[in-house]
Amino acid sequence: MTQEHSDQELLTTPLHALHIEVGAKMVPFAGYDMPVQYPLGVKKEHLHTRDAAGLFDVSHMGQLRLHGEGAAAFLESLVPVDIIDLAQGKQRYAFFTNEQGGIMDDLMVANLGDHLFVVVNAACKEQDINHLQAHIPSDVELEVIDDRALLAIQGPKAAEVLARFQPAVAEMMFMDVQKLELLGEECIISRSGYTGEDGYEISVPADKAEALARALTAEQEVEWIGLGARDSLRLECGLCLYGHDLDQTTTPVEASLLWGIQKVRRTGGEREGGFPGADIILKQIESKDVSRKRVGLVGLTKAPVREGAELFDADGNKVGVVTSGTAGPNAGKPVSMAYLRADLTEIGTEVFAEVRGKLLPMAVEKMPFVPQRYYRG
Image (tube, rainbow, N blue to C red; front, side):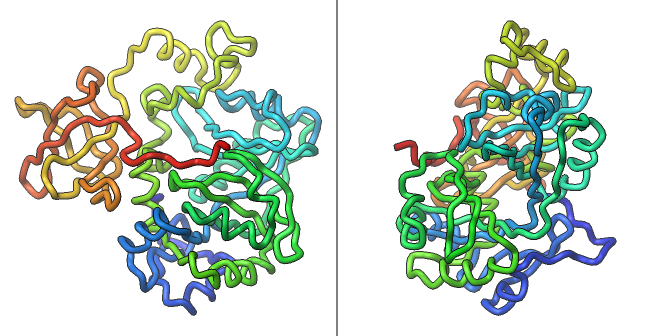
């Protein structure tokens, strides 16, 4: 999870009172008072999402609009991603980079026809807005949305549940985005999420969020899910958390995010480079020469290996560090993400994690640790 902002009064989402009402345990997270778990408990919330449907309040995330004919070209100048060719009604994963090639934040970008809809991480919201404003041309307008909540309904029953309120969602594919009505209110709905499961993210007017949340959780398949299970769900599916698995000192190549850089932006592509840190990132792609890479690790004992655990080779040399770790409720074994020395990243390579003075064996394994079940038709 992102860093706490303990030196200021915590912000709240439009659903804060409802979380308290249903018995959530609240914690500081990215400057907000957020639900980490509900009475069901983290493990049962995790398993319920994989089996049925879970509802997440992600209203702490930043929601932005970019207006103007030059919006796509402008945003593309700040990310190593193809935004210009992003089709209307589609969404894409992207990341801001700095001049050193490091990742400033990862984000979602949707083409809604007359504007781009952008969702950024809560802890990076202010930085991202400043970054956009510092580079924005005169023909593009940045609108910061502060009157909408963001809900995510995730799991194999999510489509069935949401279709009861709006049948059109059943026809959407993974990464489709549409403006559709729910309970008589226009919402921005994308078939996406951060659990590895099928599901939807719903941008809803803030004053209508509670009614929608109550309606969805009244369905028998749906339970409230907190930040604790959101973290273990995304980790099992090999999805990064900014501030932990990604940061300003880590390039997309080191982070194993090459799939997020389309060929058109790479060396020899039609729109090669042109983003901050392009020289460094493109050189790394071409040479494959990096000192460390993000990998998945599975525990060879039953003990979970958490963030911050140092990794060693058989000779006792420090070779990396764990950036995320969980017991892996569905994987059936401890799973972690880590940055390992590049020559040790082959599948099956064994390393040792230091946990409370003991060295626990772990093996490099391909991610995701459990199958991703996005709906592609």
